[in-house]
Length: 182
Image (cartoon, rainbow, N blue to C red):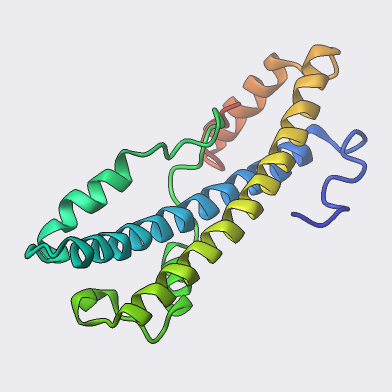
């Protein structure tokens, strides 16, 4: 969807196709957001261990894990006002990808890692987070372009809420689909 031709000619495509492209982009944005949350959690664990070592704290990161991860969860997980799909579509594959970033570092026993291993893990996680964030911004720009096209059609009277509702009712009656939300 980041290919230049993904949204090419979107003005001439049927509204249903534009919505489909938008929904695909929204799912990708949700997946990338999930990967970012995984990376942020690992970054937070590594930073907590670095902090524990520098401050000489006796508390293990495992004992602090609930606090570390809850701090991560409190951060905004929204997507700049965009509606998100409820679940990432490839959660297990994304989790495995994040784990393979630093295959020689096992965060399950972070206290046993050397300073060098911890620094290496932190660099790898931060670099991947920056890459994922960049791709996510690009996907959001695609979503914005598609949403703008949908809004333009409604504004110009080329699309109708009544048509959308009628199509939704038909899909629901046929049992072919859940009602579509816009």
